[in-house]
Image (cartoon, rainbow over all chains, first blue to last red; front, side, top):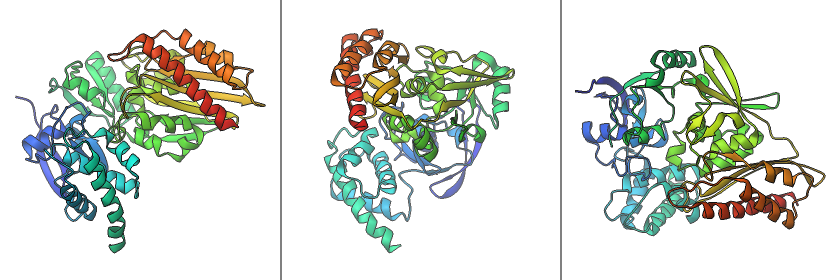
Length: 163
Length: 287
């Protein structure tokens, strides 16, 4: 049996406690111990982007971080973002534009897209492609994903205005 | 794809991390950003018994400019270096290089010290350090050592860093008004390892090159300085003939190592192309 250590952190807006083994990755803890299975594990070596989560405001690969490092952190997964209008619009546009087929990459893709729009409010298609180059999609050929992100980036400006 | 069981210790200060290195010796490994170490551990190519996590040490994450010397803490993440106005102003080479390193999510976590201590021959930063004539600062219980980048990188994943030493900072001279920083790499896809990459620092006087530090990565067993090519530039303007000659000299003096996908001949050819493109860009920028 691996030793386990008690952690306390914020997950999708709620303060939680969790026991982990030192060798458990953040991705494995989220999926296997906390049931957040939208955080997908593709390559487990940082190449595919399916396991992206947001830690302390920055998008990171949850397969390349040990869960035990998360003491005191704020984690947001693709299942979070409750009440986030940008994420809501992204999800809607991904669905409307069929920007997913199997959906394996979608959680990570949504986080990458949200990040881009936050930092580059009106990205062009080339900037979108560059930004999601760290997220592999093996179904769509990316065109529909770029469409959905592009559309959202323009709608998001209106959303910001409404707040 | 799950790592060997290890003991995890979060160091709260540089001194604490150094004391832990002393205590655990060769069985310990420093965990900085973890973007290379964690996959290596998942593949069980590295099986440290103890991980000393230095990612929470604030004193390793400072960026300062003083008396023409830029000092970057080893714990600074790529994203912090990229977004630093101080770095953009005093060492633009780094801001040109960092967008080429992997992807956004990796750059949000990976650290500058981690990259240098690992010394991956395909990594962008060791070549930047050679071009910038940077000094790597390492610390142990016996105090600090300042190692010129040219002596620090010794081979593939091989540096002058001793087992009980922690890489704490990097010092580099601030860019002068007559200097040009240029970074570029050729890779198949955005974020992939380069097939050939270059980090150049040129000093010019009256339209002629007075000094040239041409560093290359992803071409040999570690980052290399093409000294003969640099010397050939001195005293000349960047005419197309000189650019052609210098590109040939650079491709001739480097000892090329193949990688998984690209042979030595390919790397040699692309190094020539890369050098020509970079020097042409610099020439166009000067006029």
